[in-house]
Image (cartoon, rainbow, N blue to C red):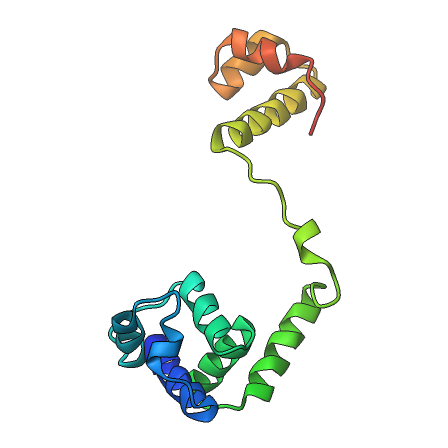
Length: 152
């Protein structure tokens, strides 16, 4: 089953169960957008899922749990159990994960760190700056910039 069809089914199920109209769901979303989502003619963003969940007075995760349970042909309990097991396998289940998110590194910065590591490795092997420059196919001035940096 397509994910957007599973979302459509979950929205229809929740609306029927809670007695909510499309108009009530359209507090922040356009009613035609809600209609397109329920007919699986449109894809939802995370923001729209959050707005739909707020309008139905549920957590966004509740809506997503229903979506993935419908898609898998399983129960919401089974979908949550699988997610819980996966989170536990990665030591995320009981961790405050927002503090674990690494800071984004610009690609040029990452490449600079790689160059520093390569220069320092060859320096550690006793090569001169000129030899390192030839080995890495970079200029001697570039090697010089990395020569006295600390390994990161």
